[in-house]
Image 1 (cartoon, rainbow, N blue to C red):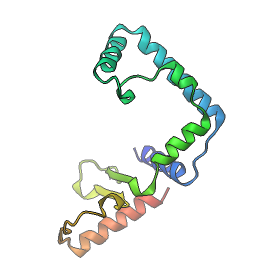
Image 2 (cartoon, rainbow, N blue to C red):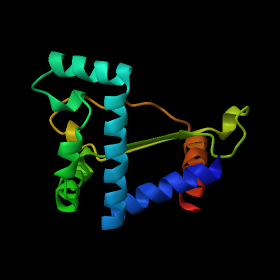
Image 3 (cartoon, rainbow, N blue to C red):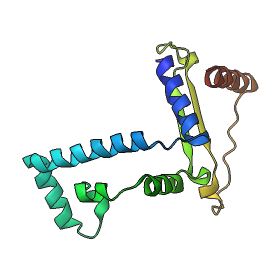
Image 4 (cartoon, one colour):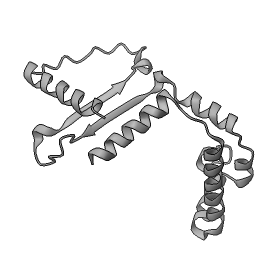
Length: 152
């Protein structure tokens, strides 16, 4: 829905422009992850899967479920540092593909868009594709994007 898209874009905007690091929210998230870790250990299927992944990839903790002990060692400062290191503008790419006018059956109402800083492609020497887009269609799509994305 349009409201869902607006809400998602607003959350992205807040995350990248003014991130808030609140201790109560961190504690709630930590408790939720601890509950999930306990649920994994209680489930025969999930605990077997986790044990198998630990045997196969003993040196790589990314493929196993987090342990309660590891979650207790997290602090808000450590989490903030790790997340901030991953949210670098040169690594950011946001793709939007939606029917912003709400007419899913009409092909004229679809809008596709992408935002990329392109920093990850600086070393590549590939030539850009020159795709000829009619001026009227390009202007219409730019107008639709502008109206749809920035009206919220």
